Length: 216
Image 1: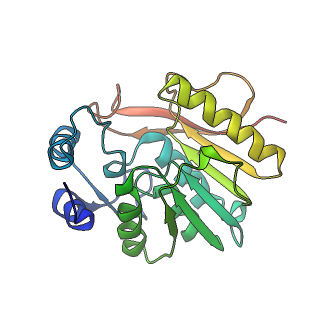
Image 2: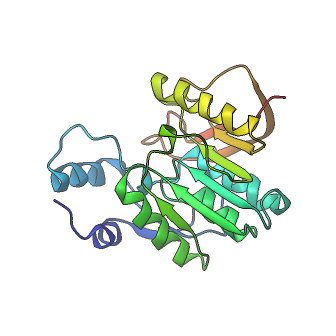
C-alpha cells in the first residue's frame, strides 16, 4: 500500500508544461502504462482506472486554456474544479485570479498531485476527496469540469448534478474532446481548440476539443 503519495508522484512523474497551456507546469507522467501498473501494484488492486492525475487530458487542457485567456470569468470568484485530476483547470483559475479554488476528486492521489502542481505554479488551492455528487452542488460562482463523460452512468449523474448547479445560479463550464457519453443536446459551444496529445492517451495526436456551457 502506498503511504507516501507525494513521494510516489514525484518519483514517477516529471515537471513539464502541457502543450496547450505552456505557462503552467505540472507533475506529469510521460507514458500511461508504466505508472498505471505501478499504481495497481502499489495499491494491490488490479483493474484500477488509469491514474488520471498523472496526465493533462485534452478536455482539461482546453478548459484551462479558455479560463487563462478569459480571466474575467473567474477573477475574484469562488471556483470548483470538479473531477480535478492533476488540478490543471483549478490551477488555471487560480492563476487567472479566482478568490478561492476547490479541487474535488474522489481519487485520493489527486489532492496530493493538485497540491504539488499548485505549488509549482505559485498559487493556492484547496482539495477534497469527498464525492460531491452525493449532495447538492456546493455554493460556488463557477463550476469547471472536464473529461468526465467516459462512462454512461457517471455522465448521466454528473449532467443532472450540473443542471442543479446551473439552476442555483452557478456558471458551469465543461471541456470535452468528444467522449463517448458526452451529451449532444442541452449545451452551447463557447470555443474549440486543437489540443496536442498522444495516441497512448487518445485516438489522435491532435484532438479537437471544445468548451461548453449549459444551454439556457
